[in-house]
Length: 213
Image (cartoon, rainbow, N blue to C red; front, side, top):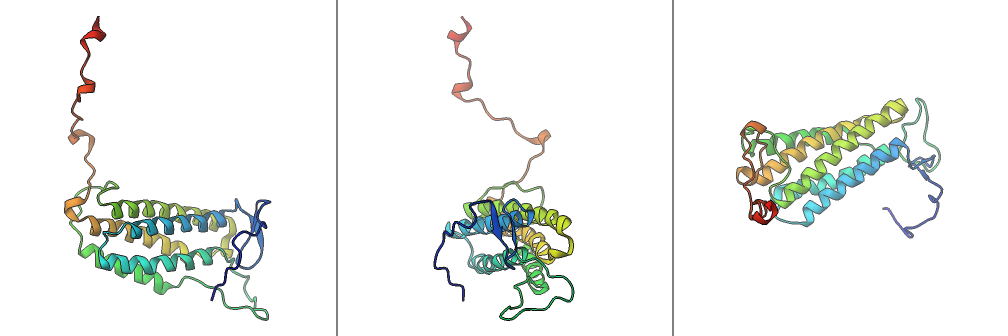
């Protein structure tokens, strides 16, 4: 069980932070930025859930995903030890994302896609409020994935790539969930420029005869 007895510690006032393995790094480190993006995506999902008006099945799935995103963040915040390293006294095996979690996301993608309208154009963010917030979560998840791969390029094998695979599948699932939640009735589709209607002129757009004098 995690026990938090004090929220502020003053230990990061110099721009440094500690990773899960207690090593120290800068708060501007790409690894730190990656799990910060994951936290932001999780927050957007939380707003979507708090807003209500989501199908029960989507609420069930998103609740589990919120917990798994903590696992993703913990994985990204814990450097992979060098080959042959052993656990010291009192140490435990680190929390890591597993292939099972990725497989579950793919199964959910198939489940919700089968219950969604046929895709006939690109989708614009919007529709129901819950779906709109999941679009925000989707884009932040994509950013987290990109930041994670940048960190992987910098740190190599010290950063586990499986959380990045998880984020990739999650962004797909969040997109599919927006379509499932909106349905054909509330989904907003992109209209290419050639077929896009021009806004009608309002009274404020009409020329004022006095301005012509």
